[in-house]
Length: 192
Image (cartoon, rainbow, N blue to C red; front, top):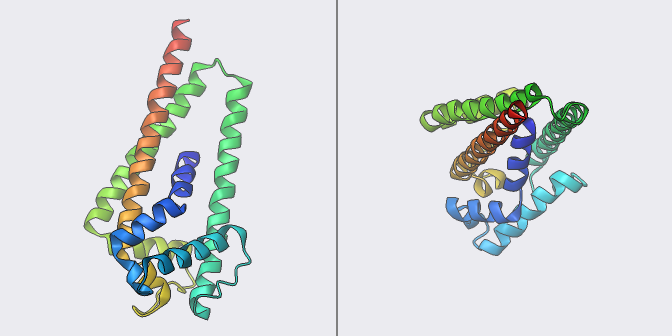
């Protein structure tokens, strides 16, 4: 589950997606020029991964939040890597055990069902879901900025709505793909 979600998130952190979402949300108007907004977003995302973590384009409170985002992102990436490593070791030790493949299939199905349920909730209460996410992962409260802040103008609610929807679609699609493929593999092992 975490591996599929991690891949989906990494795809959405590419310029291909962020530029599309900036266009879709109209947030490029933060700088008055699309290319400037794209460049600013690329620098911020780049600093999430490679540092130095100064986020010099942002106000001090926004930069502090982005450093916290970096910690959460690294934690999620690390946890996902461990989950994939664990699943890989289990599958490598017994690649012909249909029960392992069925467990993998169930994980994919659970991911799809969970994301569908969260998507339905977010469709009707996005602001509540967004706030709940931030209260859980950023309990210090350093995530609420005025509408004039660079982060809010570059990544407004519309940006997060379209990005959350894309994450849900990718996660559901990936989960269902794992479910179908792992079930087929389990069935072929039982038949042989």
